Length: 248
Image (cartoon, rainbow, N blue to C red; front, side, top):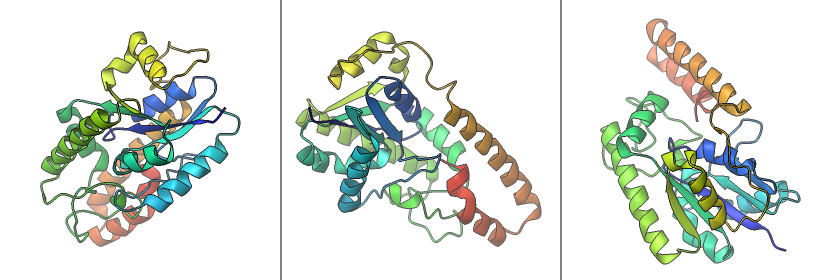
């Protein structure tokens, strides 16, 4: 029997890490979150990265060993959904949708001096060579407004894709994943027939979540201290070097 590709979608800051925990807790399913291997993310580009996307899917297949379901979760897969369905007609795409203002607020706290939704020269906002290319760009310099435009665009495209590919794509409210019925519905959608682990809180007890929280707390303290004692140009160089470790 051929394997089934699973791709997780959503704006980010929408529960995608919890989704990966839930899926990986089902026998026969192995998915990554933002391509993370040994806690190091491997994001793809938002624009014109079809060849690398396909190569990455092939790598995921190889990494999946004997698991029947394999895949990855990342917001940047959205532009490639139709392309991937053409290549993998049985592929399943699971989108999470969190309330708009909650996503904006979370991203503002999460990204700090980084703004991947706007083309900039690195003076007002700091550049991130790992993640900047993984987000779409908007002609809006106000960061909160740009994130809102991103949210609007993302779910408008999701709705259109669901209309066109209803057998391949579904979308769940983030909060609904706390409900057993929704967890069952999600597994039904991907046509999962193995033993189901439906209980548990998948965002509170996993090693990666704990490690990520420690990194973020350390980063926040370092940033706060650095703003007081280090010149901006030096802080910028430190950000470029270490942001990919502390954030996302």
